[in-house]
Image 1 (cartoon, rainbow, N blue to C red):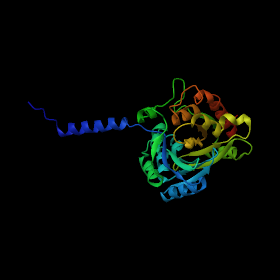
Image 2 (image 1 turned 30 degrees about the horizontal axis):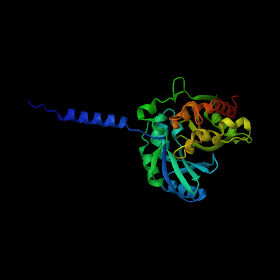
Image 3 (image 1 turned 90 degrees about the vertical axis):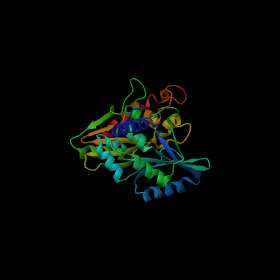
Image 4 (image 1 turned 120 degrees about the vertical axis):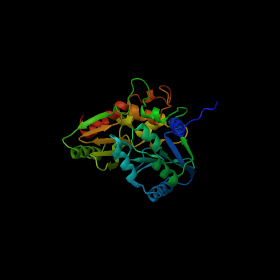
Length: 302
């Protein structure tokens, strides 16, 4: 005797199967857009032009490591997505790296879908991914090694027991108003003679939320643990260049200034790193504390 499955039940089964399949998708933190002959300056110029032609606006550019330029862009869609989430400002800037490697130049960008889940964004970052691929290219995804970073895993990610989650952010300072908090960050980043510089500022529409991109380049040996070149020498040692980890986000949310804890942010972008060894997290054991202290000093809370 044959059993007939009703159309509604069949539709539910199909939808359930599709949902399961989507949940099983593996995401990598970085995308290599292109790799070819050229100079760093030429490729930086053409990359900026391609991004602008695709509707992105360049909000900042700097060089965290010799031989690498980082371009940070946003657009109305990214700002709209940022405004949808409680801490959406962290995802408002899209980071793109241009790196000279011997006689070639590699262009890569942080995977916006990976960031969507890792930074708890409510909106859909697929259109941002598609726009980046359309304008810059997509040779391969990279990073994370054999770690299977699914949407579910990214949404509740932490590296290991006793290490921070996305919500365990650094509380850097509290002020009388949003304007005062923004001014404190801008004034702190404008100071000379220290490692911190302002790369970009993005104001989130309809919210009292502003995100800053902070560059970290040592000016003396005491700042060595927060130096971008030092950190990349530990973690960025194989596969594509992952310099688009920088700049570091600092978020002004209402009257408060905060940042993601480095033990979360670094681990999210480099989840396959071992704890010990030449390229292990123990080599950076002093960096999270040094980062927190530097950012607190920036806003005058330490």
